[in-house]
Image 1 (spheres, helix red, strand yellow):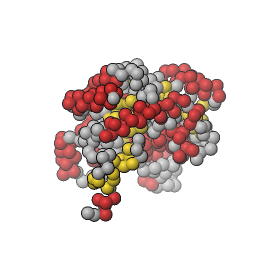
Image 2 (cartoon, rainbow, N blue to C red; image 1 turned 180 degrees about the vertical axis):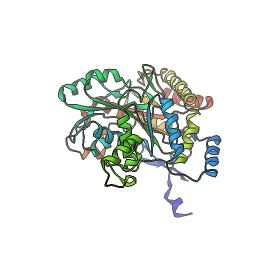
Image 3 (cartoon, rainbow, N blue to C red; image 1 turned 120 degrees about the vertical axis):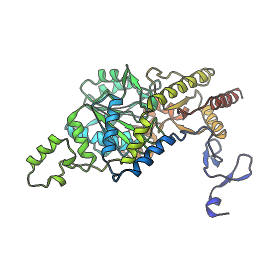
Image 4 (tube, rainbow, N blue to C red; image 1 turned 30 degrees about the vertical axis):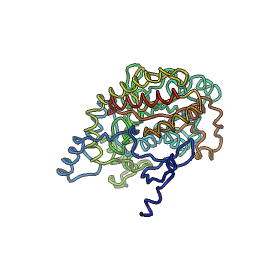
Length: 427
């Protein structure tokens, strides 16, 4: 037996010795146990034969693989689908956040130390760019119905911090945030949206991602549609779009809109226009092959989202059988479900249920990053409040987890899930 195989020999629940290729931590026994394969994974392989054929045909008939015409075509199709004027395809949803925040800072002349409201339960790359770009994050507790800002806490923040400059809203788990209420509380603040995992979610019949100065999406493998790695920034602001175009490619002037490029050439005649840098920037571009995959996937996005909604409604119907054990007050209207979240009324029940699901090959994850104030990188930051300051986020951290949702879940898999949960609850 190889050293690599020996590395993955762990005690199984019956104290036997078995080789497991993908070990995981049993959270009740604190030891590694079997986890291969998941019968209900977070995401199934959603790249179809048609997708693969599109990429094969493209590679056979092109001499260009770097950012080019296919990326531009994908950006145009995405703008049409979302209902916005301008979109930029970038290397990930995380870099989309960095690009949007950096461009907003320059576009609106924001300063280091300016305050930006962020949720204390979201993905880490909503928070990191705020800190990295010199802003002061002001954390807000969570509403368990929308998994976005708690209105009472938001009102208190408006009193404690009347100088808020920007609000970074996350539409989490495919559930739309209450944008109008937030804007009433902060009428003078700038708003941006992270719609990373909520493609197609709507708020008052308008797609999330069109409700603010700018928004971001992710097309990571596990999301509603995939380019394997990739993401979008979106806006209706032409100046912001021009700035993001430049910053996406090192800050180079030649990436600007044509009329702006001509302005830069006249303004800086002593600098070669092909290597002229008019702002700081990054290399956040994606590649043609990712766009080809995205164009193929985009054709099925709406129909796949319908299946996700059907799954979410079936999930709610399932958990409604057990009102003593689960909270179920999610915002359903406009939902474009990313996952199936469990919020348990008892912490011990949650821990043991999650372990039971894992034992039956159902993959689980915490609710996003849990209470972010518990994360080590934030614990090292100055002026960060203690996790206990956000009681709802703390409760969700302790009592919540999710399983995957996707458009390929079968009726037989649903029947099995229902039987597993019913068996456990009745125990």
